[in-house]
Image 1 (cartoon, one colour):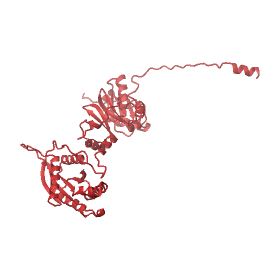
Image 2: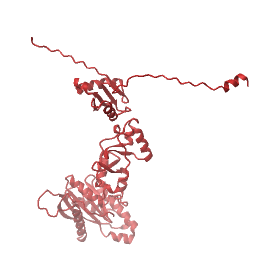
Image 3: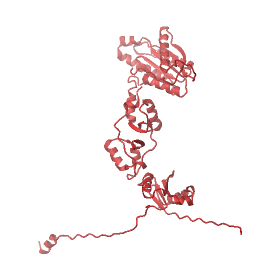
Length: 296
Length: 122
């Protein structure tokens, strides 16, 4: 998983607490940077933003104008954790620190641009990497989760017989249909890869099965152009955080859960069933994040 | 051109400098018993701290306050021996906010007289 350390700006422009507001205002204007870490003896002691500057008398010291409570992250922080922090605090930048020492800065625009690479350009849905992150986040909040893996049936034939442009149009429409079926705040829809979609939901396994059925039905009941028949099969697998017990040898991970749902969808396709439920497993919180497909 | 005009144009202007010197003793510290720092004042609490630490180390206490006009108060420690700050500060704030806004730094001279009446058995 990509970390803040990989994308942060390492060439830091910093100021000192004893600098004047007027001098720092001029520095911000010249460098076109809207927020600068305040550093004393190599330690981060505050942050000064253009907003702080505007509110202060130019004669003041930076020590009297800066924000002392700085929201910081370590270089190992994930992009999604950083995004949540920015949004929760309503700020424009995060200072990246190694202990007390600032080592970089990440701005909202830089972070969003990087996260945008994980948005599927065709459907506008989040990609698979975010599915893992979201599942882990829900588990950490103490919620039980279920993964629905939905695969369009014989979609390769559509691409071959009608062309990729038509195929892409169908994928966009499927994304819209599924978006209309899922419930905001409970279900999170992703484009996993190719003609595969996935949902992580906080609904119980049986509710997740019903949701998967509604998704499959919504696709098959849609009136598709050119008389195309589009159908899908879905697999469902449920997971909850493992209770701490001794003797657990091989804890399952979110990746295992996704894999179970994926295999269940393959089984559904083979057995010509709409939905197959793989079952429920206990997930270990640690090492939940595994390698996942980066591209669709 | 007349000879008079020519002489006026040709003459150099006289320039003189006058100097007035006023001498007085620099107060150390340049503040009295209390200082209240407005939220938009040209100096803030940290600047005041640097000044006080340099000019009168350990004689003043800097208190950050939540107030609509002032953000910090600097109080002479010897005053706080006579009157605790939770008694002194509200009175100071109440009086100073009548005469100052958040752009001001107000200095105050505070005289405290303690009256004690005691009776002893004869």
